[in-house]
Image (cartoon, rainbow, N blue to C red; front, side):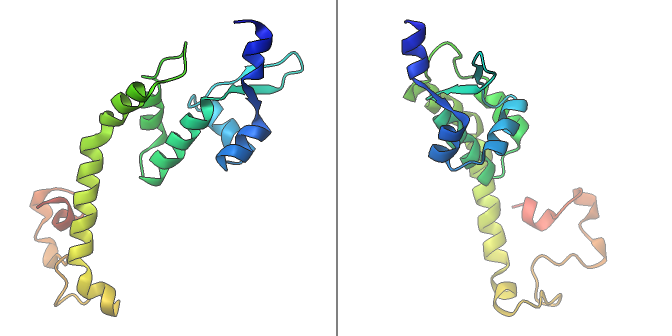
Length: 151
């Protein structure tokens, strides 16, 4: 592929920001964190390959699910660098945290189901609250919100 053909498929930071809905400052942050890559022109301007749009969408969606950036970076590191990732590549990396997402869903469902009374009145009444832990009776079960973490 010629240099001209290669650069014709690249986009600027402004174009990437406009298409992805992510601020240029966030894109530069993602680059510093090793989540995306760019090349620099002779004028030191960033140029991104078009498949960076998918990576940014993946990053944003993963962040909304509460997945830490370090984990996102590790998973993105499994994508090929020498070509645009295929549907199969994306399917393979999405499997990396399928079980984690399933557990998050179960935890959110437990939280929703146990807070039904509390959400209605907002009082978090200790005599009716299923999450209450009087006298720290669950301390032997480990740290954190044990009633939410345990089935």
